[in-house]
Image (cartoon, rainbow, N blue to C red; front, top):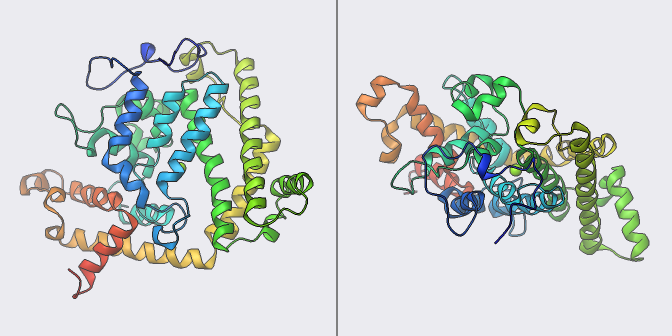
Length: 382
Ligand code: MG
């Protein structure tokens, strides 16, 4: 069985964990974090990721990343780095697979639209929603709502959190109030996410034709790897050249993250998870590579995320989400019964109806949201 003794003393361990909200007997044939990973893989929200947008809407093409394939790539990158740094691979995997569970349909456009709709009802934030999915919304176990995950998995899922929300969350929100760091595994999953999306968005951008290699040649980091590929394989072209370039970019980021983080961990002289929580962030790129990753992000924002054809989808997504929200708030009777407050609940706290609407919309896949929109707004659709 996978041994936890090969890990560093500052890796997260079930033995020193804050554990689960509802006490459960320890697992017999896997570790606690493996159990979390397995619960995540088997939950409904995980399967929905297959039909949720990353940048391109699911029906735009079969080869583009979805939130599901994105999450699998994050887990792969995270695990590789975790093993090098002797961190808890199972925990990194669990956090990575769960990190986008609360994402709305239509990517960031959906999140922004739903957040705007929820202004006045406490807002909507996808990290918090991911936590809400694993803490409350999944209904699979007799003894509790949610998946009853380990503290460190939940902490890793809650990457960001506004103070006003952190104060309502108890122990898992405390680090935002105390300004402390999460575990190294959580820090790592966060950067593995960034490595994954920067690179696969370039890949998808090229595949879609919205980005060109000529544009990308202006990015130093890309151009360097590309030249190296052409030196190694004279005459190489097309997808093969793109793939060779992108794999080198991913590798360069991973190697830099490992070596920089090793140095920072050594310099901070951390021994335990508690030391990690009180230190500065320790999983990081070097300044030089950090700047290159930033340039890559800026390039994607300017040239892909705000490409006029992406803007069109973004605009449609905003309309769909907003119109669904407004319709359900105006007439809760249009909602499936599970999402309607009882009269008594409504009198106690009318805001909860808006939260239920947000839960319903956030849980939708891209195509379900489009279908639901047609059902509500087109008379010949049932
Ligand atoms: Mg992500």
